Length: 271
Image (cartoon, rainbow, N blue to C red; front, top):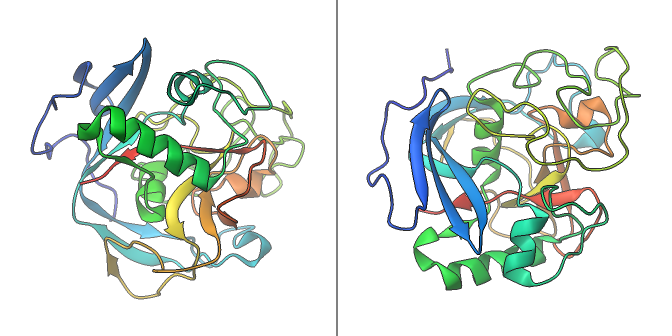
């Protein structure tokens, strides 16, 4: 009922002036920017409606008590979201350092706080103002992660290490045990979802723009999260987490100043 078809509603301007390259493929529309030889691509997510959160019968839901109340969300505007988390290569050409524990230019930058992500975004927007970079809202993140699917993971009911970088020794819902890599991997080392987005399950948890708070149960349009709070939302699970934490609906939060070796972020573009 809530699954939508991609790449039928075009953005108002395509391509945009900042784009170094662009096109359309089996996953939909994409644009990319290149800065000092480092490229970051973005995928277009159409406006749409979906069920955010998890159904009451989803196994291992509401990890650590974080509410996943299922509710209908309408995103009235399409948005661009990066096809990968920010890499160490991109972070280094912008910020001039590399805080990551697990070094590798194509690995995601980690050990970065929400505040660090905001500093990176501000610097990038100062260099290329028309990019209008930001973090995705929690609703945008889950919508993009699900890629039109309602199952616990964008590929279905289960995951394993060939699909997701997580602690495969503790699988989801009595699944088959698989590998625990114990560190990050390159952002495109594993398969993308149906909308061309890589590693939204596992590898690193990703900061979202929102303050953490409980969901409303009624339908909402373009939710932005609470106006104030003490902690920011994290999504996606990581190499450090068990299978249950990598579900599309799984939520976590942390203080905006926290830096950990399993936390990174993904860029989006504001309106």
